[in-house]
Structures are given as structure tokens and as C-alpha cells.
Length: 125
Image 1 (cartoon, rainbow, N blue to C red):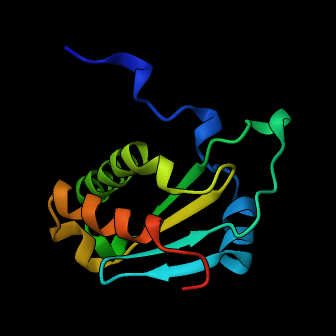
Image 2 (image 1 turned 180 degrees about the horizontal axis):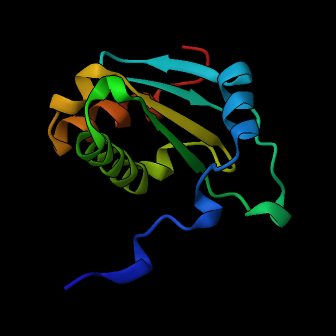
């Protein structure tokens, strides 16, 4: 049985516009690991009228990772980690996660551990 939408990332929890992705990759703080590149907004640009203090996530997985099935699996694992580790991010932060080639070979636990480490990193380090 499914838990329904309680754990789901809603519209307010996701970055969807190209402009948001480009702004974050240009102005956000870059954090990298062997399998992921993460950009975190240094200063929240959103007020209560655009979704409140909850962090938002954007995911990029190129065809270099593999076919659609592989890319979708990696994106599901990233979203799951984001749901569980959201409290490690500053309130109102926007996050873009770019999956590198090695991400397809990771288990869910390994994806979670690697991304949690990137999310918890102190700003400027």
C-alpha cells in the first residue's frame, strides 16, 4: 500500500523553470562529490507568497547516465534523499542536483549518504 502524497514533492517543493536552474548554477554555492554536483542558493530569494521557507529541489540527469529507466531511477533516489535530508538545508534555500556518470551505479543508501554530506556542508567550505 502506498503512503500517498504525504511524502511526495509537491509543486512548491520543486524548481521547474529554466530561469531558476540557470540562476542557481550561476549564483549558487557549488558543492561536489564523485557522483553529484550540488548548487545551493546562498541567500533565499523567495518570500511566503512563493512557497514559504521550505527548500526546493531541481534535478538534472543527462543521457550520459544511461537510458530513461536509469535516469529516472537516479532522479527518484535523489528526490527520496532530499525528502529525508531537507532539514539539513537552510530555510528557503533552492537546490539543484546534477547527477554525474557514477550516480547510476550507486545504491539508494549510497546516494543518500553522499547527498546528505553535500547538503550538510557548511557554506563557504
